[in-house]
Image 1 (cartoon, rainbow, N blue to C red):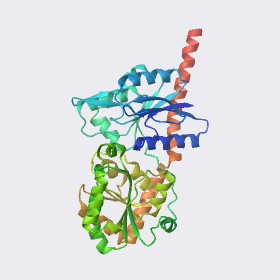
Image 2: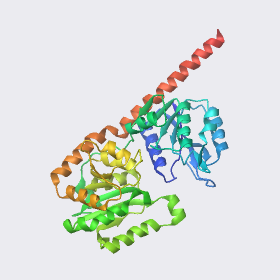
Image 3: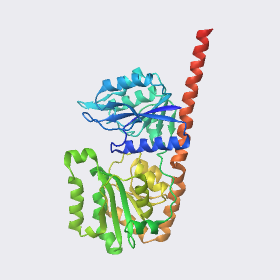
Image 4: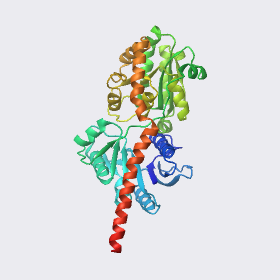
Length: 395
């Protein structure tokens, strides 16, 4: 089977590039005969040095490049196309109206398409709603990562076709060796809190910093790891302004010695090491409508005691006692929840077990099996249809 992925791609540093790279690796580990190729998505004016796996590229905001990519794929011998969809990647806003650049792609593509929707807004503008409905109707399969997204697509977007729920994959993690990883990472003797991903004001880390003084007063050995590189777009426009604000806030509150900033884009192995070393994973995000979170998926897979704000994905993933949910922008509630876990080993252990029992089902090998099965259905159908057309012509 030959699969093309229309997605951002490493070395571009963004969550979807990481996700797609992990997915491609998982698919090839499960089925070494699978041949994958990438149509990379670049920012305007950017020319990246990709590896040989990148077959073609499109430019954000250039609708014609999507038409060209579709025509190239038609001639490439690819069996199926997988699109990783995010609004900012596949269109632009013009006077408040969203222009869907995938319209030209779908008008020209002659290969089955599977689209994964990474964002499903509960209250979209009319143009965003129409774009999602068009994409859903034009794709052979539509994938989301949470049941909440299915409900939104049915009720808000009026999508009537079948919708597949395939959870966000994560490494198959054995949640053992916390002491050893703490020793290797110079965290011995510290009760470790962590948050990882790209630094961005929407992630709400200042509320964890504000909660630290009260936590540290009760538990002086607490240490908060902010394992985040500044988002490339933010770094380009503002430099390290947000990180500097966090550092200044920690200094003002007297908790500088209880925080470590790790300003680098980590490998999967490094992320897993920090996760295993952590005692509590904190997700203080500010967007209530966030429908998927790769960092949350990783924390579940690592069997972490998790404290999170009540965004859509967290409300679903941490239900039934799999984590602790708190209100947005509440350093008080964050501090109380973290303190309760740190101060109660039995509660911490219970949360860890429930998180792992839930998260282990979403390890990449299992997710890859499901994806290959869904893609193969399209390839088999397409081949059967081609045989039927050929025999009709001969007859």
